[in-house]
Image 1 (cartoon, one colour):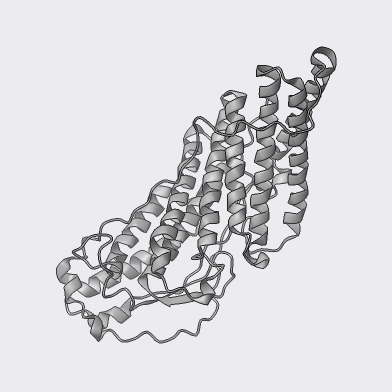
Image 2 (cartoon, helix red, strand yellow):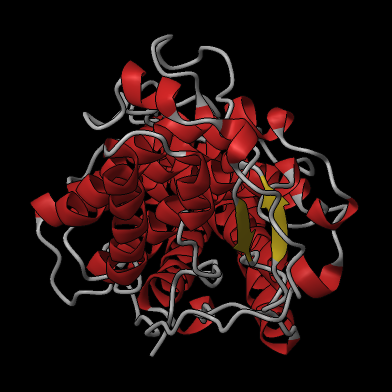
Length: 414
């Protein structure tokens, strides 16, 4: 099938029992809370494997786990954002990275767990969006869910970068992993760009003005360019294929923008020569994107869904549209306008008046009802033994299903 989206693998993690904290629990409520932590974590890891799970189900479990984790992050009684918990650096967590294979990174830090779980859920949102978009006939409500999922994921990546990463110990092995700010930036920008793809497709379907579609496509191309730039300094063996996908999408949506701007120049401004030049630029960018698709296919990467954009209907449709529009402008210039084709490519009208996507703001939930001040105070951190260094054996990757060719963006370009 012709895959439209590139998706990196979900992160894998080692089991965590939280039993080490039992040594410091002096209240009968302590073991109950530790049991709930273990059970909820396992449940989250179980449902997150399947991209077809209902988002309400997965998000409820995700939020519940964060509320249970709260007392390991913050001093209970002071609210979110208060002083660090006395329990924060007692439990060891092990997580792989979405672009680094099966060798995990370990930290004795509940903030590392928070960052990792948040990234995992955000990546699941991306995969869930792809799953919905893969349907052959997507409804308006489903398109809205795709849009919401991607904005939600973008907001979580932003939260991890801005609110958690600075608090983590900056280990050398953290470079080019999911807790590298470059990776988080790339994910966030990719999510917002993909959300805008939904907006562009909808604008085409509803036959909005060519000027709006052109501006939206340009803004989308810029987001993809920024995402690719975030990965520029990273190891090509880890991020090369992902970056190439982002570059393909940048060129594709810039070609899309020029294609529709050709309509604006011909139909609204009667600048036929400029229209020809713009459509020639669109064709050049389109062919560059096609060539990049071959380069993308040749690169190796840990991606679970390898995009094949050149084979996708929306890619082929744009190519046909550019050809048709260029032929029309050339023909009308020969018979009606007789305008000189400028040497310089006319500048796009770049700012969309509306329709731009933004990350959905994310914040931590309140502490779970089990986390009372009395319970928190009753746990004696001094009695908790130090965690032993792990063997750091590879963690088995999470089994994932490949996803097919998305349809929401395959609207006919007229």
